[in-house]
Amino acid sequence: LGITLFYQKTIYVKIYSYSKSFGVKIMEIKYTKKDLWLAILAGEIIVWLSLPTLKNIKILELLAKWGIGLKLFVVFWAFFIPAGAILGLYLFYSAAKYKNQLGLLQMGKYGVIGVLNTFLNAGIYNFLIFITNIASGFIVDSFFIVAFIITITNSFLWNRYWTFEQIGTETVGKDAFQFFFVSTVVAAINIGILHLIVNVIGAPKGMDLIIWANIALALTIITAFLGNFFSYKFIVFKK
Image (spheres, rainbow, N blue to C red):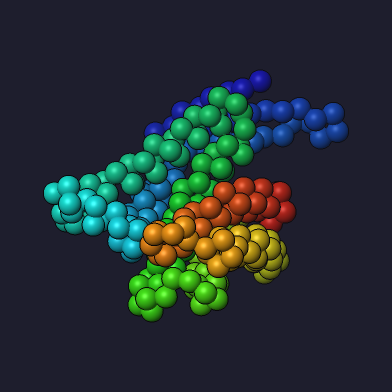
């Protein structure tokens, strides 16, 4: 039996499932003002973190050739990305409501944070490439590690307190250990992928090394998204 209750500030969908042993279990799927504002905040942070990457892969240079200046692009980007975060999260909420699956809303939040972490990771990675002018070799692997440490700390805070809504500090030490362990395993796999593409396969003839390094980074996103989400949901933050 599903009962939908609408409030002024929060939309609730309560799903009642019956257990032979324990009676009624209640699960809530909510889209709150907090979710809205955090999606906007994450979107705005993404806007600024994306600029070093867009510069290194020459997107800003290409836009300039088309007559789109940096200021105009930033104004557009500062509106477009947060709006996309809000819309994307609402679509996942709608799917969660329709399917009665809280995990879909959690995946939507994780997706917003995932994009934030992707650009935080890429922003640090590209900033280090920019200031050193090094885009190949084992030094690039170390750039990935530095970016990973900063990004994973950010990821833990967002996912613990927003995506999976863990309240209290009783298990924070255990959660942090499991989170960093799982993330490190996934990151180790991604470092292997990155090293293989950048240093073993190498950039195709005539391709800019910085662009090739970013292509390699992009290919690790799929592994990171799927590996981390399911590990966080079913191992770290399971209820």
